[in-house]
Image (cartoon, one colour):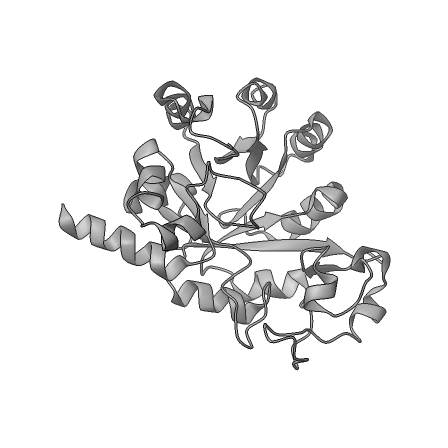
Length: 279
């Protein structure tokens, strides 16, 4: 359970494993990246919600993953090329491809709605880095928000120069990127590790130990985006359901991951609780 002003490290020390809900928890008439989906995720036991950010041509932020326009809005156009006036005319589609009464929600409104309620990971914001940092700084929710991006020096420099001190998580695809990150005076609170197989150096006790010694929580994406993209060496959500929780989520925990992103928070929460009760 999140308590206001608790850091990620304090929560990990308390709960051992934190659950991040990918775009909230959606299905039926609950649309991804909406307050309803995020609330649903918390009801399913998530500690953190992942919120995508997209900015319109007139610099209005929405909680939306660009590229999902055909699926979620029924249009073949990137909303980043649209004005907020155009976006406001759109209605979302539910999981049955039926038009529903829900519209895309302003990012500021989403953040305000969950002020003091949970941790919030901001994704897909590196296209408008300066603007998103300014917005998040203005919201004054530094104890809740975890901003992430790929390891690009231009982004790291901009974050350092902003002086906001916001919690940050690099998306790392190779151990060498850790050396780049350490050159910057930024508040690294977690590290998202991408690996395609279990021979990755990321999974060595030495590398995990370096992160944890620095107070950084290792994050893994157990989400299964599709049948081609591998984010966690196939120790993912689909295989958890197909093969078994011990063989997948359990292995991620044994490897030392402290934050697990999933599309099925209730299943993961139940598994973690049962494992704790067995001890």
